[in-house]
Length: 365
Image (cartoon, rainbow, N blue to C red; front, top):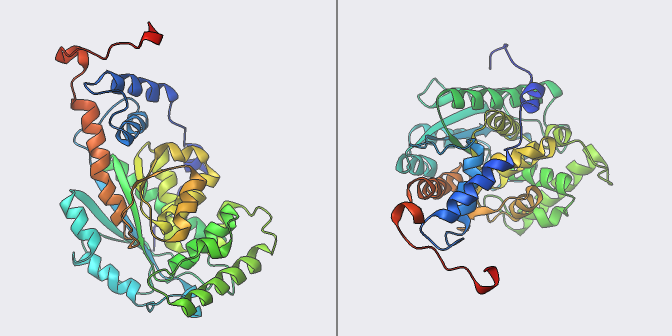
């Protein structure tokens, strides 16, 4: 269990300030002065300008990277919404701790510190390097029959995430990737997406980790009934944190808290796929200025993900047809972000290199 000593998530949220527009304009002037045709680095230029704004006019070198993988079980798995049994959550956490998962490979390759956070797995882990045991409870409740979390449990999970973001900043990390593990969590993310965006349940609900048609139809029914139970048929603008409490999950709540904390600490963050972006969408609905600090690592094959990205207003860096989770797409995008920062910092300007700039167009003379 986490320490009884907590801090107010409301205070964390109130500390989130938007990035200053002046930094973005300053970055664009510098980008336009580099030895290249204006705009020729495409999205890399926007990424560099956003990072420059996040870091208040600095480009940290070396860029210290970390990925946090939040793990929890979901009571809604009792309804048969996943192709995999609930025990896989704990088994995969053990795989992370033994270094054998995809996220371990990518974190090692890209020099990214990995922390696994047990915020709600239905299993008691021993102490292990790289594991934070911060369990709120052993899995969320079954949202099909009752709210997934109590108000107290939601608050504890949010504060857990915010505390970890604060720790990441104190460790000197500049950019953090956000990933997850939890059997059943695409069901929770689908319910969050439908309730938050107003999109139809059928549009935002996919097959998760490999459901067949019968399984997906069961999942659709569970999501529909869960939303109706908690918010009524009309979905009359439920509060974002109430959506999270009723149909979310402990790892989604902890990720939302982490996002609040990272933005309050002026850290750059990279969301992974559908589930972590559901947490980001909740956080963004509470504090829209969070988008200034957020990169979307990739676009998942889960259909709800693109709707969430559009709802927040952020564009994915990669599109590789992935749907693994764990933070893999976010860590894969980190070298692209790091490349943008290095280009900004290390390319010569036309003036410093003695290179002639483009001639002005006749219409500009």
